[in-house]
Image (cartoon, rainbow, N blue to C red; front, side, top):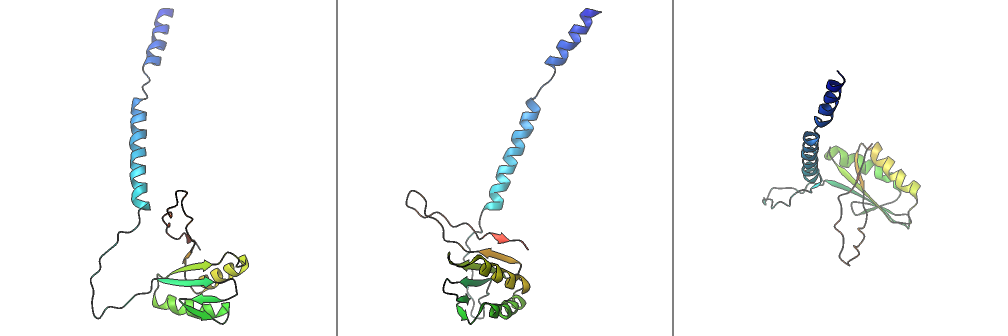
Length: 153
């Protein structure tokens, strides 16, 4: 009786096979790697057709905060920061999926950047990003600029 008990223990130890687990793990890893590359890839450049009656659609609402206190929206200098709210509301009404980019100089105070962010959110713009200057790579070539990081409301 003791001999049969030791035989069962040896068979159980030899019967565990981890090969299917490793196979499934590797397949899932490959699937995640391929999916991540598809998600991260940028849009393809398109050669769009030209038309005489076409209009240029503004997709980006540009907000620039300068160190001297000026606020520039889409190339227009504003008298003060609060004047941005009506312009942002008007642009949001024209383009519901409007994207805003806040570009602030390094010496601009943090509170002023947050005030601009608050004005955009009050205008109903939810797709907001911050513009940055890409840092050159170590080999002297400029690093590719990543897309703006969106701010979730």
